[in-house]
Structures are given as structure tokens and as C-alpha cells.
Image 1: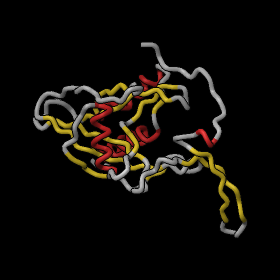
Image 2: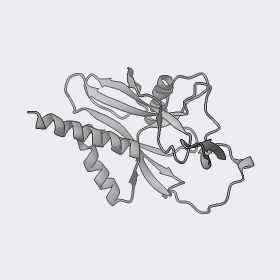
Image 3: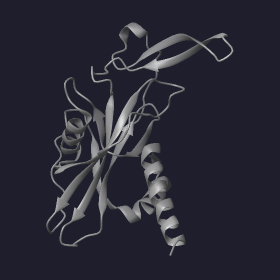
Length: 207
């Protein structure tokens, strides 16, 4: 299949925008001076106040048949005109909790069915100088009794997502290989791996 690429870029009138709006606000700084700020707003936020979820799926063997692993996805992102390595993620539907959205989106994008939620993060923002978009990181449990198998995805028309299973201990090495091929890594995923590596180093230093 040919790779995706941007073929043209146009200015978008706000009246035509469905997924993002450009806003200008005034705010008062600590000295009382009024200032201006421009930002992108997500108009699809549900009444629950959370836009989206990212899903950290912990794949584990109950019999020790394979090392603890997770699922990453490869997806073309037009704003950066690159293929990006990310965690599974998606928008929260009206009336849905972040945890419910995480279990649904994981199954749709990867085919994996989580047995439950391990933890859900506080409300997070990713680029607060640019956008009001927010999210939660939901960690889910995906246990296997024996063999680890890749299920069929349940993608919507127009979605082209490649899901991959990677051992947690090998994520950094995988990132380096992706970088050689021109992919970029989503910051949230890289921050998770950096935290995992730091925790390992701190644990070793105490021994």
C-alpha cells in the first residue's frame, strides 16, 4: 500500500472547522496587566469535561510464557506529515467515562479486550501554550493464560492503523529503529518509556 502524504495545505476559515477552532482570549497577568493569547480549541468536548484518552495496555502472561509487553500503533498524522508511533487513543463519546472509552478504543484500534482498568491518570494537558485539548491516560490489564496472539482490529472506514506488540524492556530500542526509518515518537509514549528507564536505574542504584 502506498504511504500517506500531504498533497496540499490551505487556510481554514473558522466557520468551516469541525474538529478545531482558533480562539483569542484576554487574560490578566499577576501585575494586573491585560494580555492577549491565541489558542486552538477543541469543540467536540463531551459534557464530562475530558476530550480524549490514551491507553497503556499491559499485556501479561499468567503462566510466564512471555515478557510483560504493551501495544503501540503506527499512524500517519497529516499535521506533521509523518508516521507517528503512539499509544492507542481516541475521543470520548458523550455519556462515556474515560475508562469506558479506553476499553472501547483499545478493542477498536487493536482488537485486544482489556479485563479491567488498573489506573486512570488525573486530567492531563499536552500542549497548553497552543491548545485547551485535554486527556487522561488509562492503564488497562490485558492478561493471557498462555500464548500471546494478535486479534483482528475493528477500524472505522478511513482509519489506517498498524498495531504492534512490543516488550516493555525493548521499547527504547524499537524507537531508535523507528527513528532511522523517518518515524517520529509521540511525546506521551516517550515520556512513559523515559520514566520506566529511570525507575529501573533508580532500582539498580539501591541494590
